Length: 430
RNA sequence: GAGUACCUUACGCACG
Image 1 (tube, protein in one colour):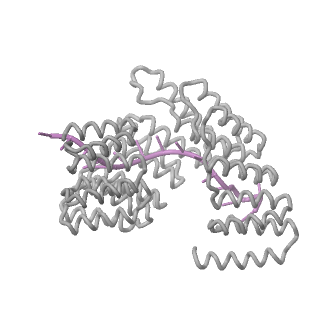
Image 2: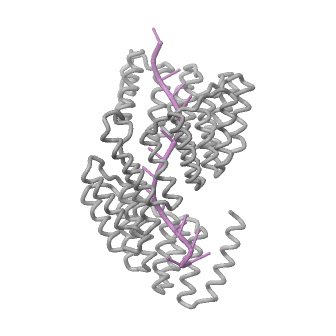
Image 3: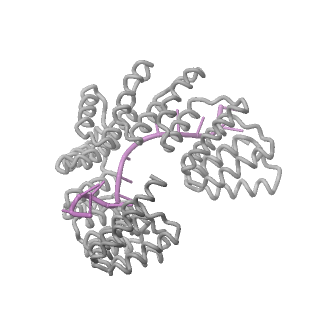
């Protein structure tokens, strides 16, 4: 039975989740194998979580209940984690309630998942209250708990609260580690406090903490949001120097995140040329561009109003067999919109669907904006109706785009009518 | 004694 668990978890680590599930199913049907135990089930549920197969995870969990296999804390932790990874945050909370009802004690793992689930559901207050609950339950918070909480605050736009948790941590005698350090930098980044990020960085470096790749990547991201492109490139240089330093043991090395973040940073400065430089540098090295790289590059072209270049980049990625996704196409549509090119936008929009990418409100807003800029109000309005027919709710950007289209075409009456409609729609669902 | 949690990157930025 132990060997089965080891086998399944190894398959999981090799990203062979489907194989693991097949093996398990086969053994179950063949009979005589030790499949009916909580270890096998928790391993499989964990694999489903990693591969974002929440439904399969839930089915397994139900089957386990049907078979009367006793559930324990670890299984509940695994299913909660799978729900969080599959963006089913409320369901994760429900499992937490259920385990308590069944008298299965939550542990420090449970609480970390719960914090994440609450934060993703924008329930920051409740997430922070988990610390209190843990204390009452006699479960000691650890670094992971604090990491989750700091990230929770950052994701909910509360960077001050995030940084304040450092004191709380110190009071409980929890020693911050590299992950806490990095998540603090990320909190500064998200809160657009790039100077604060450097402050924390210096303080830690002076205290002897060794920055790793994630640390530098977070700093580059902070520079990006702070509009500090020069500084971002300086950090890249530092990383390259450290990468060739044998004393660093390869702890610092520019990776996909590094390059992708830099390309994104160039977008804000309309430095499409620098972005191309970064792209070429990565293709020369051993970092292969991925869909994020190409999308970021296209987005940078969009910000620089370089539609032709954006389309060319799209060709490159197709040649390299990197599959575009909805964000890639949205970036292309943004380029069309910024250049006011309705025809190209229509073409990109059509292509997007042949690639099986579902349009979002952003796709339509950009398409409508591109058509509107050319005064093609009829088509723009058709698209506006089409998105609603397809169950995509127009948001403020969509209204903005269609109202602009009316204005370009000089149809003030339609514009003011849509304006009223927009006010109504934001009132019913803000 | 086998199984579970945490950090960094791309899409609307208003030239509306």
